[in-house]
Image 1 (cartoon, rainbow, N blue to C red):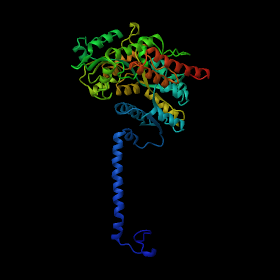
Image 2 (cartoon, rainbow, N blue to C red):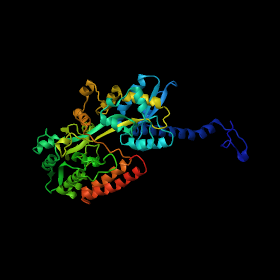
Image 3 (cartoon, rainbow, N blue to C red):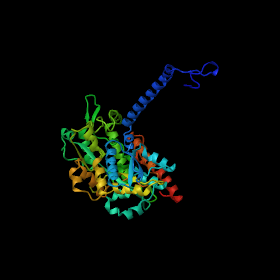
Image 4 (cartoon, rainbow, N blue to C red):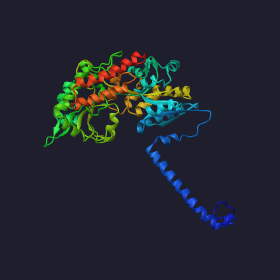
Length: 470
């Protein structure tokens, strides 16, 4: 056996015979290296499957060449991802023409846009409702109205606010998947201990303030150890506080309205908490809060008695504080006529511009938004359906004790959403800055909101002057 460039070559390049023993000695290190590589590969694969569950789902069974494979990017993980995977599996089993392969993608709103711009998008993508305007403005999605009409899917099939969240400039760019509304969550045990009726949450802002005052607890040194309510907790909807005071952020035309009297009043109310309880003591108190999805969450840990949260909060209560005695109700308002108002948001599903299989992608979307698909998905995520029509079983078997409330908050037409402005992200970022300045007593509400108004009005004026969509 002759092996060039090996120990089998003698001096001067003359060939020599390699004995079996010498072959064995030469190959042994290679075998050891190969075994090591295999061990490392399997270890990394196991770690990857643990860290990224979507990888295990990507290893789908062989698909018949006769079936069209639809690549579907979605943002959900854990039980939310499992709920959609069940719908995908149901669709795949329901017919033999299209096979949907779902992959979980983090930061999907950015990665999907990059893939579309690069000419290599998925066939269907799950986004957030606030992505619809910016994606549509960039022509990054395919309009759906022709396909919807042909399929017999109508506006009247859906709760109006959720259909509206998928439309922009007269076209439908996406379809609703799982919806959400926000409500006051309160700790009944903390109410009872403070001498409050545990079954009677506040209905007005004034009642909320009075109850919050009764619920505050300080230790022997005067440090705050419990609060009734805290406007910066969780801090996800700073733009929306004015809606509970009757305010709005945009008139739908040429005026930014964030400095309106109702909005000013809302931000004065926010500032009243840091002034009443002290900025320093409240900041020290807040520093002890843990992550949202943990037992150290301020509400779950019994540190804050009342918070505004979404329909999903039930899932975290069940996981991290199963013995919590809690309730949910519409968030208080200044005017009784506004009571029942809520913030609404929505997950959506769309076909990216450049999809290789748009017809097959729409077949899947049509299945998802059917009563069968939607109820399976929303039940799996413990949310309510965006469809007007729901089955008796969906309500009867739903584990969320207040699911009817969250659904009603969407139906009653009092719900508000982000303004449909192409620069909504900058607008909400500026409102977050204004919120912080007001909370930290660095500016008056008039000053903080006036600054936002000037910046955003200039941006809106420029777009209108250029003939662009607001």
